[in-house]
Length: 367
Image (tube, rainbow, N blue to C red):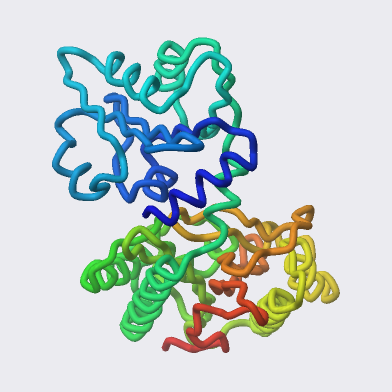
């Protein structure tokens, strides 16, 4: 944690911030190791560009804070009867912040009551969006982060393998989801997001909510799931056939498979960007007349969040750094007929790129 704190403080100085303030969420976990739910009790971590960081949190959290953060953070507890104002004021004073300080905050995470409390404790400060700074730091995964993600990948692939062995025509989507999620929890993890099984025409909706439709002979069935291990996620999609799919859907599968391979190959090229990977995958589909049916970006970053930078999309021209982790997930969606998506988790390495997910990509027939 101290090594990460040093990198954060160096980045604050480089970006011209006097301090960084984060609230419960993935950035607080990244900064302190603490997993805390958002609530109405004020919780804030204040990290100055130099010096010891402070954590303002309810006194009832003492045991958890002490166990996780040790002596890295100075703890400023507060009780319900006194309120958080005095504790926050002490933390602001002890971290050396004053009128005119430039303070980085999370524009898309911090709530109004949290910002108002900070403004009251630090009048005259300048508050600026620290999201780009945090994204830059979190995009490059440390060894321990990658180790956790590899375990999350192993769990989601093994549980997917267990699940598809039980799938037969006539099963309801929701029942298949239950099987997969039970396997994930039995492996000591929990689902990273709403697990999806989309059968037949439901597969044409990339964000389908699994329901009571029965899987039918001739369906293509999209399985999309992830596992969380020590806070870090995996995210995989595979599409399977029940019985014999139509010739068009088999052709669509082959196109998506080729697009997935092209995207992963582009990620391994020197100077790869989100745009170059997106273009490589998209061109395969466009050249074969299905471009208008590839209706989402090619991928997104993964880590503590299921969706985080870098985004694999046109317009992202920044070369991806070593340690960046993201998905490559092209798809084709035929409304009223079905869909195909093949998704892998990829990390940029010193000599190219590695696919963390290795589950077979060739079309498998489940019954």
